Structures are given as structure tokens and as C-alpha cells.
Length: 286
Image 1 (cartoon, rainbow, N blue to C red):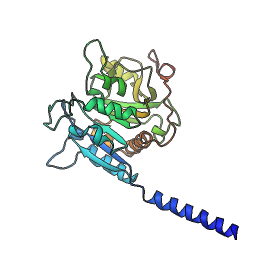
Image 2 (image 1 turned 90 degrees about the horizontal axis):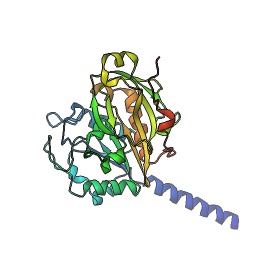
Image 3 (image 1 turned 45 degrees about the vertical axis):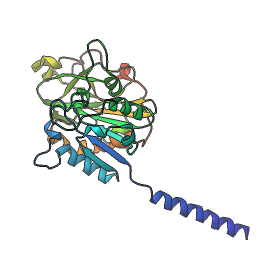
Image 4 (image 1 turned 90 degrees about the vertical axis):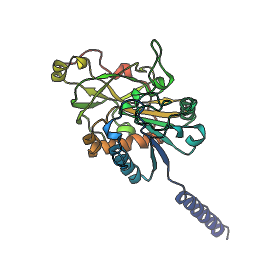
């Protein structure tokens, strides 16, 4: 009798747990593509239609069961509204507290602080391509936003086909990325790298020919995808995404999916700083 009753109770508990799990709402993410500075074609809406980046992110999130909100309205970055989301994704430029180029609503005066506090308290942030071209630092100091994201846009040269060299094999944020995958892209050179906090996931292999043709890139291979812990939160930067063709590539879509899964808490954190161990200090001739 007791055995039958125990089994019945276990069955009820299991069914209740399964029902609760099935009823869990989908994770929610917010994609902000406001351009207070230069507006990239990948995030530009034409004739009221979603941008290439919005289309791809929506497709990727839908396949993962994630509810994505796409917006250019930076005023949505508030402490109260951020409570609705697991992850915030930026593809932005300029000082987002200003109306700027696209004329979309700016972030409130306290928006940046509220964003950083939210991440630190357990939120997550993914910056794409020009996200490092936002909230620039004043001369001689590093802004709180740049400290968080891990780097600040400095310059770029002409586009070229560059390969990605994985520096953290098996990391869940790049689980599907093939080592050596190459893309024709606009490759940012970032300054003010937060080397003491970043976990480098992939380097850009510049290549000897590019170094010969473009003085800007006459440097050792450098970080192009990285992540870090920020308080209780997770932060990831992916420097790709300028060209539409990159967004439409299956490898990139899978990479973005990996990025978002990791940001949302799937898989190990694995954010121990590794810059000094994996970033070459001199040019390695191939």
C-alpha cells in the first residue's frame, strides 16, 4: 500500500514538474540597432522592412525558441524594461544618449548605468560588429561601456578575406565554428582592449598579403571574438557582421546561435582571462 502510494506521489510530482516546465515562457532577448553615428547597411531598414540583421536574428532566435524584440528605440534601455529580457544585443554606433543619425529615440540619461547594473546583476550582453563604436572614451580614460564590452573601435582598412583562428577550443560560445573559417569582411581594429578581463575566443588571421597591401593591418593576429564575466552576468563581443553576405552564411548563423545560447547561460562560463596566453606579440610568418 505504501509502495503504491509512494509511486503515485512520485508520478504526481513528475507530472507537475513536467507541466510547469512545458508552461515556461520562452526566453526573451532585445536587439537594439540604433545608429547615433554611422548606420551600417546590415541594420538599415528599407521601405519599412526589417534589416538583414533583424531577419537573420529573428530566424535564429525562432529556431531556438527565443522571443526576439527588434528595435531602434534606445529609450527602451531602462531598469524596468530590462527586467523583461535575458539578453540584450547591440549593433549600434555613437553616443546612444543622442538622437543622432537615424533620428530614433535616444537612451535616457541613466540608461547606460542601468544597462551595466542589469548585466552585473545577472543579465547578459552580446555586442556585434560596431557595438565597440558606441559610447567612446574621453581622451586619457576608458568609458564604463568600453570597459564592459572589452574594446573600442579605432579604425579599419579596406575589406579583405580573413580567417578565424580558434583560441578556446570546445568553448560553448563558438561550438559550431570551424577553425580557419574565412569571410570577406570589414575588420575592425579595436583599441583600449580590456586584456585583463577578456577570454579570447578567436583571432583574426590577417595574412601576409594583407599586411603588405594595407599598413593598418601590419600587426600580429588579434582578437575578433571574445567573452568575459561581468559581475554575475555574461558579455560577448563578435566583431563580424558588416556585410550582408556574412549574415546570410550558414556558418555565421550557427555562430550567432552559439553566442546567444552561451550568453543566455547555456554551457560553462569559461571566461578566465587568457589574452596573454593566446594572442601573439609578434607577427608569425606563414
